[in-house]
Length: 221
Image 1 (cartoon, one colour):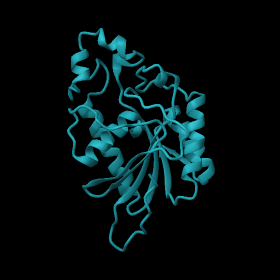
Image 2 (cartoon, helix red, strand yellow; image 1 turned 90 degrees about the vertical axis):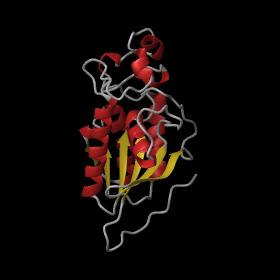
Image 3 (spheres, one colour; image 1 turned 180 degrees about the horizontal axis):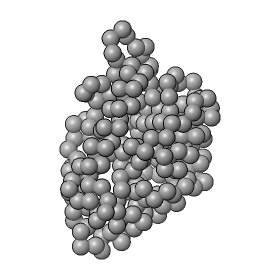
Image 4 (cartoon, one colour; image 1 turned 135 degrees about the vertical axis):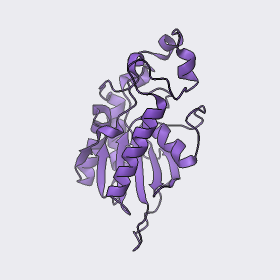
């Protein structure tokens, strides 16, 4: 799939066009281990994906680059920033969900827990002990994205974030409940295009990987 054609802003306030990229691969991605807000760096594959993404974005007219301040997202953004000659603006509101006691665990380790059913069934009020509930996390992402869109109304933004962030964005843009099982991919370093208006969000294109030689599709962030 090719990246969508950019439309110039009209005299009226236009939706903000977002290209949202999940960070490149980390060792914990490869191990299917939940990272959450633990600051895990990119691995060699992730660094290659970041460089390939940067080259794939070259020439597109973004007004600004925003990134989660966790290093796996920020370092993926930095590769694009160097080629696009734009600074990376750290945005803590784009961080991955805080998984509390689940952070650092593999899927097999989670299955052994008594609260596994609440996790796997996407209980929106379940907060993993000291972590974020799904409902609270989704509200943070919606608020952050709407704020960025309002700051850059009618412009195009490049955003680097996490699998959980993209999960929420896809659901808002397609009117899917948070509780339903995920039936859409979120590959590392793929390009995902969304228009954000006030209040409507619209999915334009999802999971574009033409710029990548390969991508590991994972369920856990």
